[in-house]
Structure formats: C-alpha cells, structure tokens
Length: 387
Image (tube, rainbow, N blue to C red; front, side):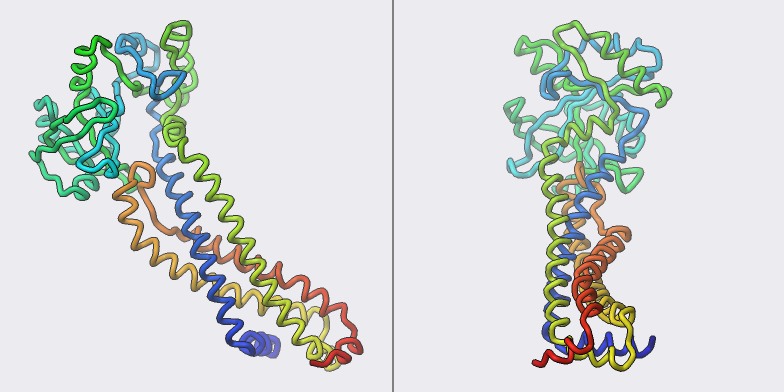
C-alpha cells in the first residue's frame, strides 16, 4: 500500500503543468457550483423562515387584485382564527428607482402577528401615535443611514406622488433568518388616497393568525368558502406558500441555477476525463511493466482512481476555500440589498461537503475508462507500445 500511494503522488506530479491547470479549472468550476448552491440554500432559508401560525388570504385571481376591507369581520369570525390584519404593497422607491426594498402599508396591529420583529415598546408607541410614522428594519436603516425621527420621502409608483414618512422605529430580527430590510407604515394613508379616488377601502392581503397550525387547511377552506361566489374570491394559504408565490418571478431563475449546477459538474467530469485519458495513454508501457512485476488489476485500479480522486480533491478544496472568501465578501451586501429574498447568504458546511464529494465522484467516474483499458490490456500489447 505505501508503494501505491507513492506511485500515485509521483504520477500526479509528473506533469506538473497539466496537474496544476486541471486543479485550477476544477477550482473555478467548484467556485461556480458552490455559489449557485448558496443562492438556492439562501432562497430556501427565506421561505422556511415563515411561521406555521400565520395564513395569508389574497385575491384568487392575482396578488395584485385588491380585496374589500369589509371581508375582515367575516374572516375574524371563522373558528380557529385569532387575529386578522391587513397589508398592501406600496411599490415606491427612495431617491433612486433602482434602490429596491419592501414597503408595506399595514394596520396598527399587524406587527402583533410577527413576534420575530423585535421593536421596543417606546418605539412602537411612537409609531402608533404618528400618522406618518414608519418602522424599518435594522439592515435597511444601516443601508441608507436612517435614524429615529429622520424624515424621508418615498416616490410612489402604484400610488403616485411623494409620500413623506417619519422613522419612528427600527426593528431587529429575533433570528438571523428574519428579514431586516422591510419598511412598514400605516395603511390608513393608502386608505385615504383610495377613499378620495372613490375606490373605497381596499387591502392587498389579509394576514390571519391561527390558534392551531394543525387546522390550517380547515381554516383556509372555511375562509375561502365565505367568498367563493363573490366578486372578490380569495385564496388562503400558509405564509410559506404565499412567500413562494410572491417570489414566483424567480422560479425560472432558480430552475436555470439548478441546471447550471448540473452543467458545472459535467464540466468537471469532462476535464478529469481528458486529464486521465491523456495520463493513461502516456503510461501504457509502464502499466505493462507493473503487471510484469506482479501488480494486479486491483492495484492499477487503485493507482489510476486514486490519482484522479486526489487531483479532484485538491481542485475542489481550493475552489471551496476561494468560494468561502467570495461569499463572505459578497454575503453581507446581498443580505443588505436583498434581505427579503436572501436573509442569510453564507456558504454552509453541507454545501462544501457536497461540492467536494461531487467533484471527487466526477473524478472517479472519469477514471473508469482508463482503469478498464489498463486492466484489460495484456502485458505483450502494453510493452509493444513505445512513445
């Protein structure tokens, strides 16, 4: 066994340039794979952070169809419902249209259903007392340098015009996966605009608190049954499903990321296959000599496969180290700008393990053809090949 390991090391270092280039290309591929997988993991963390005690009721046709405020009392009367609060997407921007972040107009009790949003009692009271008051997440406040009592102006897109708000509270997340990039202000400001336009009081969705999460399906069906034959039919689903539908615009992007991840593994396989085939062709005569000295097919299998595994591991390890640094540098900025989608953007241990494991499997798979050829080649045929 020590002799085999020594031969593996010497074979791997025989053509140093080729080995170095192979390791470098595998490292680049692993960086790409690790980063793509981190995006998928971060997205799933945001979805999984949803609470089982909250349902969301929206218009059955589309999230952008509004609902009448008169539905609130009927939903609140459904058995198992503990609280009902409304929200509506504002869709404005601060100074620059490219400066995207979530702005939601809500009822005063809305945050009662979100205990993961930590807001001091003093700031909560200040927000409730101020008609133009707003509560923002810690990361959002840090992004724009906002402080308490700052006056900011949002430019509306769905609800046109300039809207001046006063920062009355800055909330923090109870867990790291809690979104700290959102803004909440009073729904009554939107309601006044709708009333003036003669549209009537409307909401974007209802957040429904439930007493027993095991009855989510029952409560959802009961709520939707109330409005099934009305002009505003509803669709009630868990907050997790709602978040998935809200982010459905990313569905195609996520599919592309998954396909791209598979392509990256295929690239590693092709790279290793090319490297091992070249190495095997150069060593056919040597394999014949080794067989003459008593080396069996199992020894050659270990020799060739081990070399491929070592090269794959070195490339994958180097790629993971570089990917860790890349994600560490970019992660904080991504969380700041896209915290509602990627609340936690970090390279996790499982991603590193999978990246290294897949790279080594690709290396071993690539070495299978050279192994079979070396095992089947007779001593006479191998020694006959010179140069």
